[in-house]
Amino acid sequence: MLSKRLKVVASYLEKPIFFADIGSDHAYLPCYVCSEYYDAKAIAGEINEGPFHQAIKTVKDYGLEDRISVRKGNGLEVIEGTAVEQITIAGMGGKLITAILNERKHLLHKIDRLILQPNLDAHLIRNWLGENSYDLIDEEIIEEDGHIYEILVAIKCEYPTKYNENINESDYLFGPFLLKKKNEAFKKKWIREEEKISNILRQLEKGKEIEIEKIRAFKKRQALIK
Ligand code: SAM
Image (cartoon, rainbow, N blue to C red):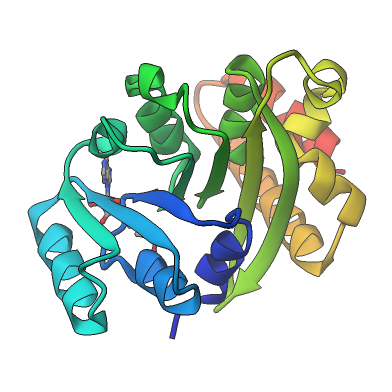
């Protein structure tokens, strides 16, 4: 059964669905989507040999070879020459997700919708969206098996939008939609983060060399969280 995390990602795809799942691993997400929707099509992109072969196997097991193309390649290169308009990237850090998006920006001109699920550093993605003409239109934060996951949904925008104009430092860090919803997972995440920062600060303040700049940055973040 597909994880709750990936089901949330799938729920934000626009119909009719033709999407590319970058870093697809076993291709569970494309297989789930194409099993749910008879007319859905997908590309499962993988850079590594092992997961690439796993993806081929899963697609074969589901009998979906006619609708899911499994491609080996680095990031967005697997969408070159295709009509894909939506991309999912899930289960990686915000740094890697933004690196993948940055590496082949020219291939994003046709991409109307991005559904991104960073395991950490979601603020890097919010920054990236603002700087690359994507408008954040929704966010979710969920808990599954003790882990907390954020899902960010963005659409291409022609002009700077309200979101991009009005976003401030705490919106970038916490997520403007998540801040409004403030559900249990959100509270849990930021209580955990604050505890982590308190521990780091205790260690830094005990250290032989007092690292003023680091302490200042952590204290600033701690104040924002509080
Ligand atoms: N997306 C799946 C999920 O959310 O469960 C798998 C996440 S798994 C932690 C990350 C996958 O991304 C790995 O299978 C890895 O090989 C792949 N990957 C990492 N960097 C990549 C890149 N630049 N291009 C394509 N795939 C990549």
